[in-house]
Image 1: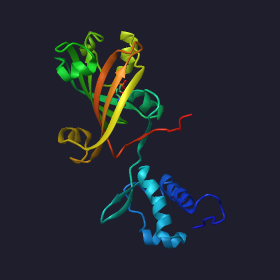
Image 2 (image 1 turned 90 degrees about the vertical axis):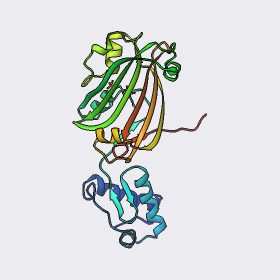
Image 3 (image 1 turned 45 degrees about the horizontal axis):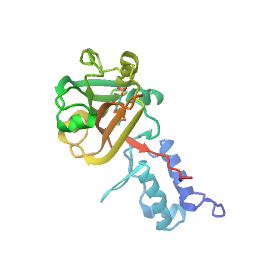
Length: 244
Ligand code: 16G
């Protein structure tokens, strides 16, 4: 394995690129265990510290996964979702050239409890729509999303077919409300059993628990969404810049 030891590119970064190429070319397939650290150090002729920096970045970026006592494995390909623009599941999936789909698990009118009324900025006990969907990409379950929407903005939404259809598109086209801004909070949690069953993953697998509050063009809260996204499938990536 040829590393350029006179290059300004650090050795660990060169190794990372070589390993990444193996993963991306499918030389190292998803689910396969990669060679041990000792073997890789020997073949590259580098120290453990250098090798670990390269592996550490590939783990952090979701390409590799360390399973204690067993080794380092190539993960299944992840969806890399940029946290920059406000987009919908349908738009994101189509942009990647994949087919979005959905199954409506619940769609009904309920009364807003104190907490939800506060979040949606409406009076307590006002009617809201509960929409719970399993979101699919190329027929594979990716996320469970439960949205709460004030009925005052979306009369008749319960009658719509929302399985294979974009909620954001409907908001814009039928109701003239444009999802314009959102605040999103992401935490890592073990998947609850109901959602694990729906997502087809083991109970307590790591998932991303996301809360999104979405505002329309007039700064009204139009949805409050709680989602579980598969941790083995999603990377949420943000671009950071220093303040000027
Ligand atoms: C995204 C949003 C969700 C929104 C949905 C609309 C996250 C975590 N969630 O999945 O809040 O309700 O898009 O998607 O990004 P749709 O227009 O495809 O129905």
